[in-house]
Length: 138
Image 1: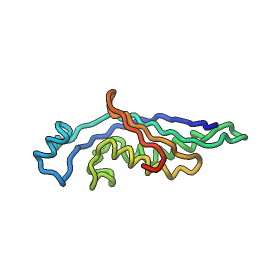
Image 2: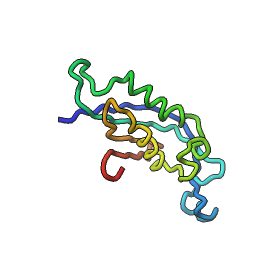
Image 3: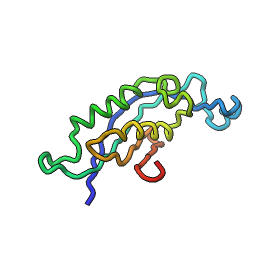
């Protein structure tokens, strides 16, 4: 039997989809309006799923009093109200697509040792969401 805990968080950030590997015209063709030099923002919804055995003393997989501050420190503080391309190290060299944001967040949260990080899901808009799960491809 497997039990999961999914916790939802929110942060707002801006980004520009652009790479120096492409010309300005190619960036516009590939990323469209998302390549605007001034960037654009989203109100992201982040879901973090952890799994693990239920502690017989507490009856919990993970104590939210430990998970919440960890996510706050590793993700919310460094990402919230930031221009990702310039203010978050991972995106100085890679395109700040939400696929890459998902991967960066997953990598940051792997350090939570009190439960196993299973999945990160980010809702960028009401039409777009991205997931990364623990496994061979992550």
